[in-house]
Amino acid sequence: MTGFQGPVETEPGVLVHSRRSREAGAETWLILAARDAGEARRDWAEYGLALLRCGTNFTAIRIPADIVLAAAGTTDRATVAAYLATALDGGPCFFDGSSRSFYALAPRSTAGGWDVPDTECLSGADRFLGVPATTITEPDPRCAAYWVVPMDGPAALCDPEILRWFVTKGRILRSEAAALEAGEDA
Image 1: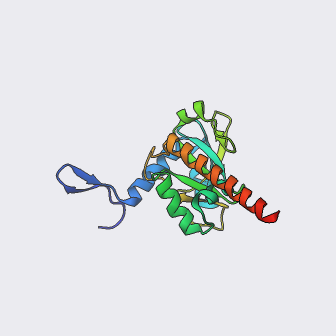
Image 2 (image 1 turned 45 degrees about the vertical axis):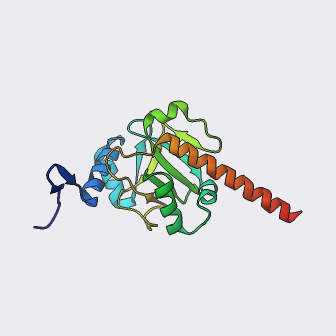
Image 3 (image 1 turned 120 degrees about the horizontal axis):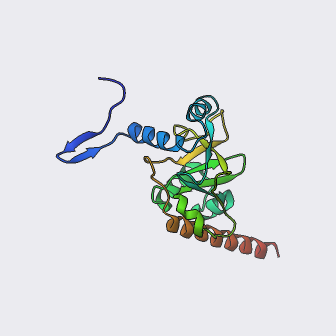
């Protein structure tokens, strides 16, 4: 049999979902944040990017690339991806080359208490974000954004406290590197 394969029971009472079924679930869940689901699906297919409303299903935290790269200690794309997957405990994050920013998706309740300097919390009825199709996990000629840590399934989001810790660590490391560089220039 070919085509879509749903969950597989590996032992009594234990279901294992395929990566594709989790990806399809994440896609369907994300689409709920679009003004028009059909248009969003068409945009993903044609442009690789669809505008989704922040604050309905998720809040997006914009993190400048220099903070993420400082935390990861490298600019190597594969190493940064592996680091983020671990540091964010599998929480979803995508990179947008146009803004040179990473966007971590967190629960919508995160917006109420987010106060981390050098970041922006995108939430509210009038805040839309270009989100890459769930299948775009590396640079794609259709758009400047791609998933660095793809969603693992519907509503699988970053833990806000882990995200806060990660950004704080990146800010400290960025500051230390800048101080070291300034000392070398003197």
